[in-house]
Amino acid sequence: MLVVNTETIPGYRVVELRGLVQGNTVRAKHLGRDIAAGLKNLVGGELRGYTELLTESRREAMQRMIAQAQQLGANAIVNVRFSTSAVTQGAAELYVYGTAVVVEPETAVAGEM
Amino acid sequence: MEACGLICSLLLILIPLAMALLVGSWIEHRHLRSIEQREAALAPMLVSDLGSYPYSASGGPPPQMIAAEVVIACDYFKAFLASWKLLFGGRVGSYQRVVDRARREAALRVLEQARALGYNAVCNLRIESADVGGNTQQSRMPISAVIAFGTAYMAQETPAPSRSLVG
Image (spheres, each protein chain N blue to C red):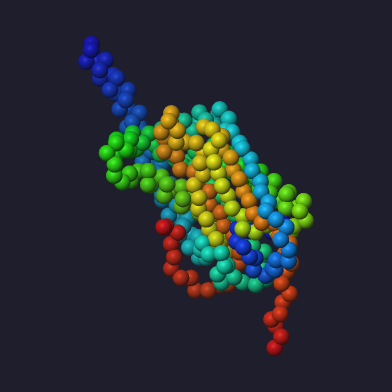
């Protein structure tokens, strides 16, 4: 499954459009991360707990989107975009969407001298 | 006795602030140094926010989307100082540095992942801020959560134009 955030894929041609696909997930951080983040707020720096929260959300949302595209019979997803929102303090929703298409490799026309 | 109590309570405020200032500044400085080093190491990569795959090379592995995120918080002392700024207005340099570091760090992670997978170019690099609920009434800790994503592809070996990741 080819996944890109552009509209086209060099070397491939879009044969068929299968529709909009999406995936989302809402994850809450657990108390341990919250306390660690509170301490980190004292000195600043990266909050790894929150970062991991976002990373896990992203992976799960992408998997759901890819599964939906596979159900539609597509072999590529183009123009993928992300969107996030905070549902409540400590829970973030990550939403990813794109267009599922069927692509095939472009037959090489060049080379004929 | 009263003066002693007053001094104690004053120290109770000042010591965490001083600690936050020292450690926070050191962390920020170290992070900035790390960012600059990694940006210099990734300079040969071709980065753009174009969707048209500039200098794309035929053959090679198909393009692939890569995403990375980072969440960075401001330290307590700077947030304390900045809260006064919020009353009077003006440019808040410390907040700006936090957002800048988060943005650059997220973009760097995308590029490093792309390079690890064997690509030498990234196009359509988008940098967005994610809302993780750090800015509520209770906690006014400035938190910058950034998601960066782009498409990694193989580019032709062209003489590299001078470009910088810094906005």
